[in-house]
Length: 313
Image (tube, rainbow, N blue to C red; front, top):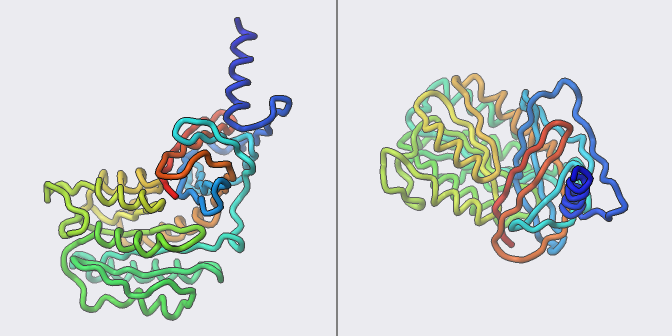
């Protein structure tokens, strides 16, 4: 009976990894200092279908990125069906430059020190982007303002960051994220939304919700996922809907960061950029076109985890 169970387990592993039955997949092991792991699949690229790439961010208990993996550490299923994993490697930022939209809350509650510290965090973020990376700046209150379209010119980006003199109203967070998703969707390569807010969503019109006291992210989540994107979110202070922000980030294949003080923003923005720049790329053979779910299975020493990404092509 024991021999039969081992045989069945081996067959499942072979099927999921797409390896030949005569080949034992190599699995790298974590260091002894790691005691917790978190993984997300941020994006699936299918422009060369059926060849596809899943970009994943794996971090340890300190939110530090992990990327020392072998092909055997991962298996993938599309709509529950195993697919062939062809390669696993750390992202090359020269080959896969980053497109990112910074969504910056400029509502009335952000006046004073909070705004100054957000300016510092956003400026330091863009100044540490790679030479091939491009960024767009979206400032918002109860309206949405694309202050700078995609560019690698840091002077233009800094000018865009400070372009909020006529803002200061309520909080149309969903509309701002939706604008970022629309602008980002037509771009190739790796792409993210990094959105920050210090208050409750209360004035979006394009992604409605029934109860104004409890904003429902269902519509904006569906839109972001339909574009194959992810929304990393920074929530600031105590007047935020933490559960809603975490749901929006998690269900789009991203992470939620929380700052109790605006003085933490700079560190969190740098933390996010470090994670973006140290993703792993899993190359695989896709099974079908259209909207679908991808589930990534990770086996890393004693750590086993799975995470999914909704996408289409």
